[in-house]
Image 1 (cartoon, rainbow, N blue to C red):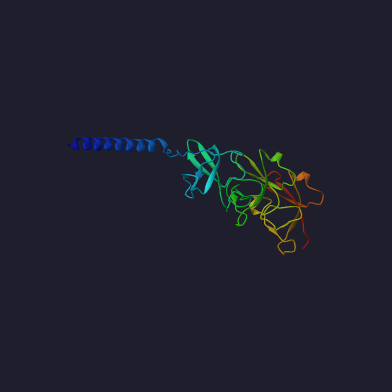
Image 2 (cartoon, helix red, strand yellow):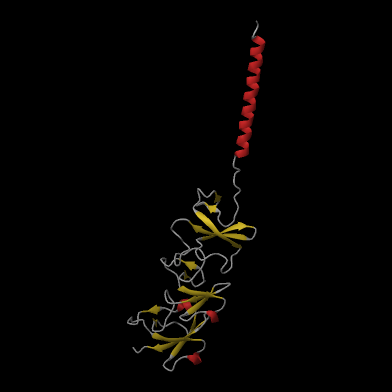
Length: 238
């Protein structure tokens, strides 16, 4: 009895079954495969140290909000470490997962907030670096809205920076060197120790006009900017 036809038929059936099984495995792999995620600039997206979008298993920072370009006051959360331009009139407000956090008050980055140090042109600078003029006490729509304790103001573009104590901002009781003229820029007022031989006068008050100076004020300085541009002075006896 010749069994070769039966054997050939069995082998052929086995080959067909194996091919069908392989096809089913391949099809199953394709159906179960996870599609590659599409990276978009949206809250919750992750960013590399090169400021590029990435999967969140390898990110250094997170997008905490999206804002217009440029962002206005309050568009980015207070703890924003960096603001990235992402095109189409948008910016991404980013917060690092780990320290350092440049957006923390006084650290010199992120968005301007109370506690930050600023230069005379209203730009933020780390408080640990030299060259800043004053420390922000509050950010308001106009100078009239500055809180109690404001000693001076700076123009911050779309907002007013209310300055408290610190830096080169004068306070009542501070002493200054004699300037060259009575009308000067704020940066020209040199604060000196009151026991210094260069101390010329002591600050009595800050007013909007010379007529508001207290009776003991024998001189005043008028600045070209600020909420209270007149500095009333008591000239020290030599």
